[in-house]
Image (cartoon, rainbow, N blue to C red; front, top):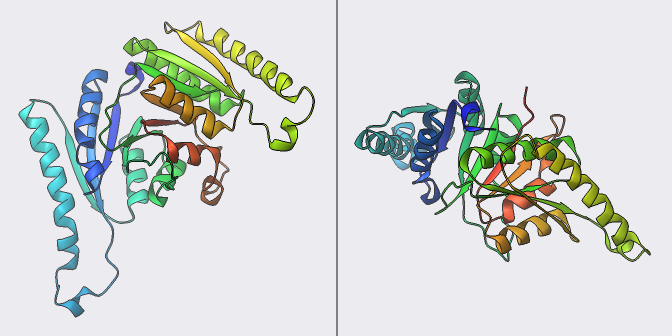
Amino acid sequence: MTTHSIKNILAAMDNSKENRSLFKEALALASSMRAKVVVTSITPRYEGNMNRVFLNDAEKQLEIPLKTVLDEAGEYASSLGLQMSTLHRVGKPSDEISAIAHEMNADLILLGCSKRLQVERILLGRTTIEVICNGPCDVMLLPEDREISFERILVGINGSAESLEAGVRALGLASSYGGEVHAVYATDLSTDRLLRYGAMRDAEQKGWKILQEFLTLSREYEAPVITAVRGNLPESSLVEYAREKKINLIALGAPKEHWGLEMFFGSVIERITSLAQCPILIAKKSE
């Protein structure tokens, strides 16, 4: 992903606190990339019977706060003299977001996410996971009160095609914005394997070899690369490293296409995105 490869950005908002500034970040990102941005909000289709509590226009009442968010976004863009399109729909949020992304040929979907607690893992919402799995393009998760920056980008490299895809995104963004890439290999040794003689040494040697291959790939880009091997599980290694080095963005490779939603729950990627305090970019395989 480079700035010239991003032409259409979709920002999906709801009425929660962490989403209130999402359209501002989307507009700033689109301006820096010279891309078009569409801000959408989806009202879930009402299937209950609120007439029993004397609310005859239930669907309209559910739409009001979401349409208000879009009005705020449009007014903000106009005040800056910038272009922004807004779109409201009714339906299942994940399905509608993915459909809109397909229709507009989106290159990036922005989603807000709740602030993470460092000592407690909060699972991603199902809507977020479904958009990641079913959407046609990369997805960026933006925590509450965080800005999008590409000064220091962290990517987990394990030699897989998915991790290299994320690495390419990190290199492209760092090159475009004058940032640096931190490539980390996590040994991912279980307790029983860790006790075996030479296991850690062998794992570290494997890690340095994989990182060297990534360094060779990085020569095509104008971005400095810092490499490190960490002896821990991937989720712990990357989240701790991000905190230590004040990382602005973590890039992760998306699950393989044949993964189901239930396989995503509890996966390494799900755990990392649930624990991290900075924005997360989920890179999907280029078509």
